[in-house]
Length: 400
Ligand SMILES: Cc1ncc(COP(=O)(O)O)c(C=O)c1O
Image 1 (cartoon, protein in one colour):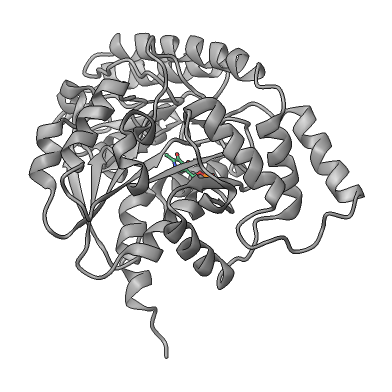
Image 2 (tube, protein in one colour; image 1 turned 135 degrees about the vertical axis):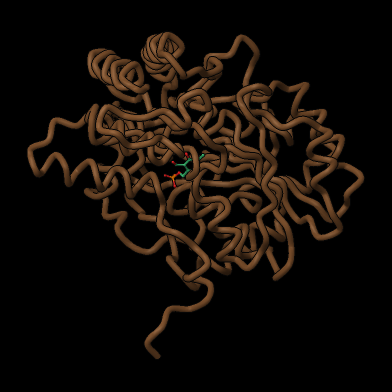
């Protein structure tokens, strides 16, 4: 037994995590590299959340908990779904997991059989196709470029559905594009799904609270109540509460699916960290006003980056409505030559050039399934963003 399984051979390591690792290596070598590849807020976890965790340790909340979350946390999640999304989920319809990634992983592994298809709009979050592949399913990619604001249309969705379709994965606001669907747009997608009785929707609402649009955030089970029994609404504490390291994600959905996810988790990781669960209860039940303050800071950064990118020769991007990413289209730069004589024949080559010559780390569009483009994370200070965008502008201007 010297080889890896077929399921592990079907997946790739996360490209975003690989780039963050490369940045750390370069910095250790003393290179002044600006990292715009990390997908996490640069803010700290709020103090009241940290205090709740410290109290949980002092109170001895250090044992196993029920596999998919404490009753206190399931109730806090159910209350959150009601408060923010007008969705009714009982604690039995809630699963708490070690990060939103595990929520998605559990749901896909618990439901997919070989040959079943999952529709994934591109650009997509890097892990969706890999998790589908791992689970033995088949990703069906539907591309939505900058010209359609990185959002799929009902016609595209209809054309992608087959008798084998099991899921559509939605992610609004999106990582990597920041695009967000309005309630009307979600409803139109929902109406396409409605007649396909075996098809479900997994909505990844991880960036719900990083929101700038002039229309309200909505999620598909809310605007399409007829689909309620066929939707898994996934969310988590990582991005909203700057808690990426605490590893708490959660989902609301039909009881049979939540039970399947629990079974898988009971034979893999068991419960999410008990201390993190106590922290998550505080985050979800506590004051939410700091979210608006943080959004104001992100909005300023978004405007700075979007304007500097759109002033860069050969790059353009629509204005994102949420999350903390921009996804510039780099079509016009393909075929150009660097001062060192290298031809830019892909977005991977462009990102390599940015890293080597401009000392700026971004992630190439190929990792998100839509090229030629790249992702910038603007979860860093205004000064660093200004310097990074200036370096990108100079690098692009130097291409011939
Ligand atoms: C769209 C999206 N979904 C899910 C996740 C996973 O979140 P977590 O860190 O809670 O596992 C991320 C993290 O980058 C994300 O960007």
